[in-house]
Image (cartoon, helix red, strand yellow):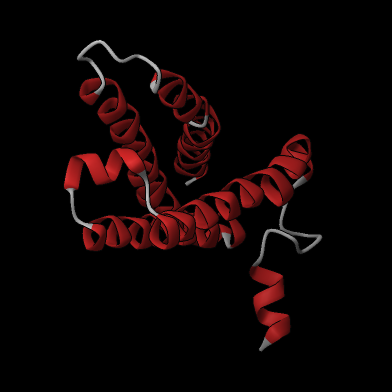
Length: 151
């Protein structure tokens, strides 16, 4: 069973074709690391909260639930990266992840628009996390297009 799982994973030596070799570190190291950090961020939010989310929602239970949902989305992203056959799951979860991060950055900006721009740095840092998943979505789109051309 484990050998079958290993063969289907991105870390198996035959999982990346020679024409994709330039993306091997992205697929095997950086994308999984990004998703692990996102999982940790969701767990952190559930365990310790977020001042902006407390300000928006006022309920620690809702903040905890959002952290758990975020960790779940990131886990789905990781599964999609780890097992290329689950690319549809990865696409859906990456879109949700990008949407959640964009909404969080927007909430920081909108709810601090009353003259307090001290939290805008956090919004910019959140937005800095978007290029990698957006790039990955672009790559997945190109891979789908190539598959359709080969059929």
